[in-house]
Amino acid sequence: MSVRILIVEDYEPFRRFVCSALVKRAELQVVGEVSDGPEAVEKAEELKPDLVLLDIGLPTLDGIEVARRIHELVPESKIVFLSMEYSLAVVQKALSLGALGYVEKLSSAAEILAAVEAVCQGKRYVSLSHLPRQGRT
Image (tube, rainbow, N blue to C red):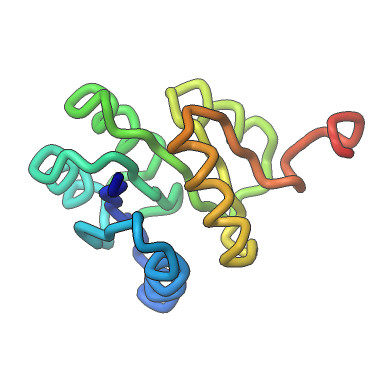
């Protein structure tokens, strides 16, 4: 079964990195790439992707608001945040919006793929550095 993915990232080199990680898996199909918030909402409504990889720090409309709007328009689309933000409060807010994943931009391609796989299975995924020390193994 194919997983249709929309990538929302304003920094083009990082967007390329994410795409290159995803093409390694035959079942993952990038159906769109956008670089700002309003365009992300529009594309999500148009494409109805299975998964949205969403940067929090977007120009014009931040990723938190984009997630809120996508969740209203396309509730079946799962969201994984990609961010440089390390605040536990931001992670909790992102997950409270219904996102199933939160991955550091400094993560490896393997961690991004692990997050995509977990979320596609209906599980939550949060980069290790965002977990409280007592929650780490």
